[in-house]
Length: 289
Image (tube, rainbow, N blue to C red; front, side):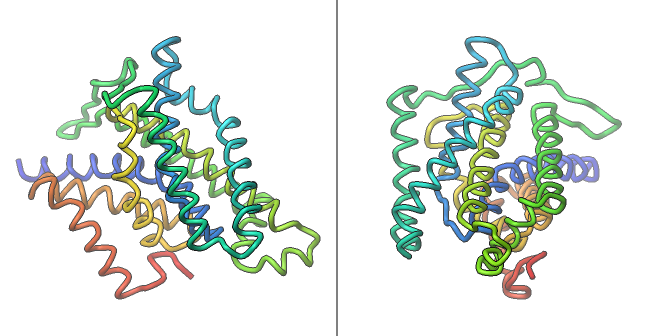
């Protein structure tokens, strides 16, 4: 009985970790590669959740399909935000404290705007697979967790291939290490950073769709992920998408096992304790250079 419980806790943790990977993907790009501390990222995730909610309620479209359709809109939103950030802060070398305040303001404005429009009631979507589960012997796979996990891993695989196999992806990796060398190759680092930041915001729509499938949301729901996404990004190694994926799965499994056997209140303490222990032994993170 204890073994069955452990197996199901690990399975639940892996599916939770898949969701954490989607939530952290954008931070891994903006913070890990571009050194932009976008603490407003969870706000864009919640915005993606509410867009999925609106379209699902009115047209009955699956939230994941809605998020895919909304990718260009979120990409454009990221382009606008980065241009404002660059012209106002980064261009003048004021991208540290003032830039952080800028993104905090964006998070606040997003949350307040959603509160004014939708109120503080929980919102959820209606899709056929919410509530169902797949059973394989003693193992259970809740479909509302399994579908987001599989799509998240596919998205992460696409991001890793894009970064490693395309010119723009390799340029993003280069701009995170040596922008001056990139300029010598006649490539505009600002343009590359704008593309990368826009991609990081576009991933928020996917994570938002996953979130509202997994659980009902309210405008302030993004707050609980601010610390966790940065912790996963640092644990995996700044700038390493494979490291982020591994760290997200590891944190998900640890939180699930802890919550199953010791109670949910211990889960964040144990996961952040693992982060501190890892950084004490390996300050660059699991896959850091």
